[in-house]
Length: 373
Ligand SMILES: Cc1cc2nc3c(=O)[nH]c(=O)nc-3n(C[C@H](O)[C@H](O)[C@H](O)COP(=O)(O)OP(=O)(O)OC[C@H]3O[C@@H](n4cnc5c(N)ncnc54)[C@H](O)[C@@H]3O)c2cc1C
Image (tube, rainbow, N blue to C red; front, side, top):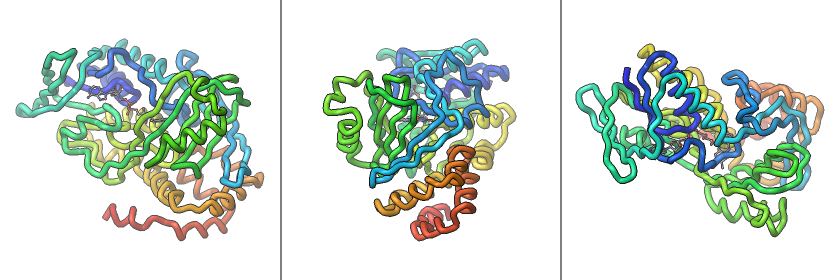
């Protein structure tokens, strides 16, 4: 099959690799002149990454095995976690693209997808390259073109989208190699160590993301945080839409283009890679992709969304109480043993250990359930 993939991020590159390896004729169109930059990502991956991909020195900058989760009263829980990986997105994305190229995929950089039309069963993509209009004909079109996906828009798959703004810098800041997480600032705020002298620090929020970020960065780094900034890495993060359709005839979307992101943390790389595996199998074997990704990914993404909606209703006292309960060794063990990429199992164990936490069921977002019906 001739397959056109739009976007050379993790979702597009890994799908290109898997489909080229299966013998398909794959072309990847990327609007930027280089695969990787601009980086709009923290690049932290839970241990779930290991189930999908082999971490390599080529792109892993750091590993972290401890986190501090802060509450509004300044107290925090300090817990061990399974090894998390901090990747360089420039290197990771280009590593994946090289894998895809070695498997036979062709890359077309500085090629920006605009729209598509149908010609019988074929799909004609309309693309511009340095001011010139180009067309590409394929049997299958895959949109891996990020949160504002033009492929999703052109296919009528973009409805019901919500976004948070992630404001982040990479900056000079001494640290002890601990991930700091602040679930009560905006939607969430974070400090992720890259090396002993460097961190990625950011805030994600529906509104006032920049103002919240400035306050946070000033407090954590100091008034001169601008001087210490190495790179601005801000970007748009889609909120998982449980009603999203990811296939229309022979047009498919995945990754951020399909809102496959954990709503409690903004993490989407593991989900992009997982979806790539599912999609490549479905395209190759002509299986029902919408059915398959729902079977394998929906529950985890949906429970993250429900938890996120509940968090939005938490008061400062709720956060202080909840995070306070994690200081017991039993709860710390759960934080260590469970992965945020398997949130259902984590929540079941937390509730079993502390049934009193059921009091937060009062915040359960029944409106989200109704939306599904
Ligand atoms: C501030 C911030 C921090 C984050 N931190 C983390 C984190 O720590 N861990 C994690 O797992 N996730 C994180 N994420 C989310 C993560 O970055 C995304 O989930 C991930 O990049 C999704 O991969 P993707 O391939 O679907 O999309 P993208 O990485 O966005 O790739 C899309 C590609 O498509 C290209 N493109 C777009 N439009 C067109 C077009 N019209 N024509 C051709 N090419 C096009 C783009 O240039 C880009 O190369 C973060 C996001 C933000 C904004």
